Length: 601
Image (cartoon, rainbow, N blue to C red; front, top):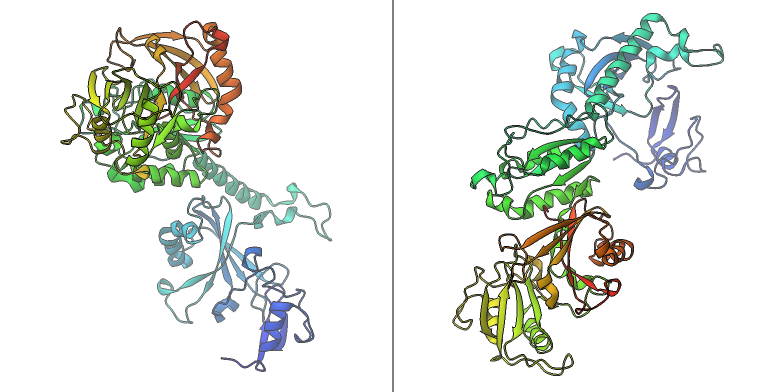
């Protein structure tokens, strides 16, 4: 290594001036600037190149000196990924820098200049696509107008096809168009203006501008999705994307190849049955919206394409990604990465998980739309203890977290009807008999408390008795992290009168559905003979609930669910059950949430 007293000869690139200093003096100047230890400097600069540290831009780059810099460097002027011109910048005699004002000589070449063919080919066909990722900018487009300065690193006599040119500098910070230099003012041309640019140079500058416009339009145009498999046979009903738009979006779907029609929610062309209205709504609002399908084997390509959108609407029905051979968890992680990149995802995986989880009812228990005696269980011990206590007090609804269409949702009563007068006065014994009705098909069963707990925790065993349910129990399997949970909620007997589904777009109510169970039933899920009646958002008979929900509770829902930093879903529903006794005036009625849903509603 050099000693501190070894002498260095230096030339600064801004003006090619020379200085002589010791190693110690150079280090002192670079770190601390002009001090008593740095010697005397004629540089226009002040040193202190490391000031502020890396975070503040303090850094020095140490690169091999290429002596052929005296022959000049090449500036490649680029518009996006297109080379539009080459400038050979040769320093004045005795200099090594060709910056303006140093007497350097500029020679202009077209992008196809044969003497630089080797460099041009390597740069445009091999390296240019790797530049942004290498700089940690994989998710940024290549600049619209930028330059790269190249220095010849090969020794004299190297054949041109073997020459190695290295980058001296990238620049995209307000790079000037050299052909327009006659239009800027200086001491001898104080009135310089646009018309001072020679006609030939102006034509060349206009050519650059035209290419920039086309490249910019390409960046803003709908995303190229041609690398993804086209699943749908047509886009019947889809509006054309606007020629100019504010944001670029996609609607993501899944086609289950092993199921009839691609899944129970598909039209004959392979799109989900309601995808077209969703996409047309975006298009009508001045945005682009492209319909794409997720194929598990194209996972990486799919999310690379998704990274080019401003927003993604997810319309993949729960369970369908797994049914097509994929991993819901892997898909969700991909969408989480999109959110981290600043891309809006409706709904995001976390929103779907937190809103759809049955313990969401516990988290809103203290809102107007909740019940304070709503409990969640994540393990056998807390479930057995808590359920025996709540069951002894009132009829209950026990809801598993992972079911759909009412499977694993049980309405439970004590067969003997011997409820205690106050919560906590007693707990049920293992041999007390329960009457149960499951919401998916309204079938009834009779079991002891012990058998019910056994089925919920371990499924069908020698201790669980005989079950006619289509489900398998094991509702706590895997623990909380895997979605294993049970929610214990007060049974509201007026469920037999039906429940209200509020259809919402963001924070706007767009419609109400009254879903009344078939006679003798308590569940109004599809296929159970329930009756659906549709109302507008301003229906007067539900005015009290609508006002409380939209004006008091809706802004607190996302924070209550631990989703304060997520927007309310684009399209979602809330099911309400009337908790007040018969005869309560409508303005005093209390409606409680039975379920939130934003998973491909």
